[in-house]
Structures are given as C-alpha cells and as structure tokens.
Length: 254
Image (cartoon, rainbow, N blue to C red; front, side, top):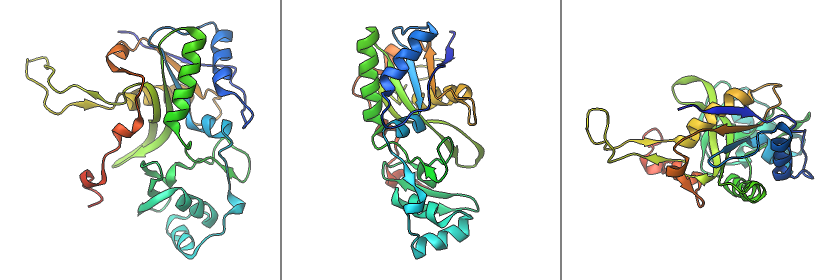
C-alpha cells in the first residue's frame, strides 16, 4: 500500500471574511491534484478558528485570584490563564509550563487547546467552537464541487501522557469514523482480536502534521490519498466524540 501526503500550497492568511471551503477547492485545482474517491483533507484547527473569527484578545481578560495562583505555578501570563479557565470545564493538573484541563468540548489537553502561534500580537485562537460541524460543512462543499466521496479531519497539536513531544491529533471529523473497531478480526496466527480499537483519525492527523509543520511552513491543509480502508470507515454522520473516554473510565482522574 502506498499513501501520498500532499501539502496544499496557495492557502492565504485568512480572517473571518474568508471562505475556507472555496479556498481549499481553489488550492486543489491550482495545484492540479483534483480530488479522488477516498481522499482525506486534513486542516489545522487554527485555520478554522481564524476563518470563523474565533479569536481571544488576551488584554480583555481580567485575571481572577485563582488565575493568578495558577499562573505562578505554571509560569504563564495571568491573562492567558484566565482565558484557559474560560475555555475549560475543569483543571486536571498544573505543571511548570502547562495547565492540563478538560475543555468545554470534552478534550483533556494542555492549556485548553489555546494556541498563540500564527496569530497577531496579543491574540490567541481557542479550539473551534464545533470542529465536527466545520468539517462537515467543508466536506459537503468539496464533495459537491468535485463529485467524489471524501473525508475531512480537523487537527490540533497535542502532547501525550508520559511522553515528550507533541503530535497531530484529530479534534473534528466528517465522512470517516474516528475509531476503527477491529474486534472479532483475526491476527496473523488466527487468534481473534478481543479489544483492538484503532484511533485512525489520530493516526492520519499525526501523518499530516509531518507536512503541516509547527513553525513557518505555511501548509495548514494536507491531502492524504491512498488510505485503502476509507470505504470500511466511511461514515457521513461521524463525530470525534466517539474517541473521548468517559471520565468514569479515566483511571488517572479517579
């Protein structure tokens, strides 16, 4: 099996007047790659938040006593900490350079997923309000435009417990199930798989992150072509919520 990862060029700096769906369609045509059945479009969450006008103006936040307390523990600006709290359901843990929270969306990640990179001075972008909805809107537009069944995944860069370094992670999806349940299939020795579930959208997001980069690469949209399990995982009603572990099963927060 061969998988292609194609970084889409000609994606401009966007704002709340930008039509992301049309921008991506134009970039695909200009680059000459078209869209084919089973293609997967992966989009950095910052692009989505910026196009939806979903900005945080840090100077508008007045830090609470709790935010000031956490800022001292995490070595973060109190205004940023207050912004983190505003995007969170609960604070899970505080470290010397991070605050782990459960976001309003249900993700457990550092700093509520707020990103200060690739935005103007004094601004930050929170996670998209509805990444699944944004992915669905873009997918439906592109499918109509190109006449092919595809999938769209919204990605973020997140760390992992007990490991240094961050990787691309799926925070929204449409057209593809984020989990591949392989229970009941056989391994190479004929044994039946009993618990195997693969976070496929996360794996695809991590692959796309190699092309997107984290600095000035300027490639926030990646096309993945040749993923031969697309038809198995095709789901027009998919949601990233199926990857979120209920708190009662989270052994680290009991």
